[in-house]
Length: 115
Figure 1 (cartoon, rainbow, N blue to C red):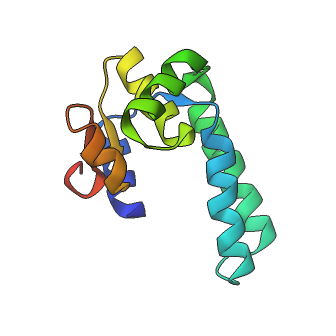
Figure 2: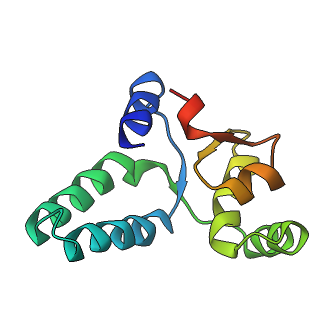
């Protein structure tokens, strides 16, 4: 999936993301470090590079919007932060999350078909 995300970024580098993405990426990198797939230093370097790439396009999301979307969809508030931002910026949300894809078919598109 990293290749699909990279291809999508190459095709359209103007990404928007809620600030939450930083914690989401840290969580993913922690899993790789724990499994021995990445060294701690590599994980830190990847986090830093991603922050440099995305820092200009980070957004705070209105809590009411997030909570309303979560209530309506049954998706988590974490997931709905990304949905709310896509709505706010009139953008598509590329994701691997089947629940989000099903709940928000007008906004959410599968990452594998994005690239």
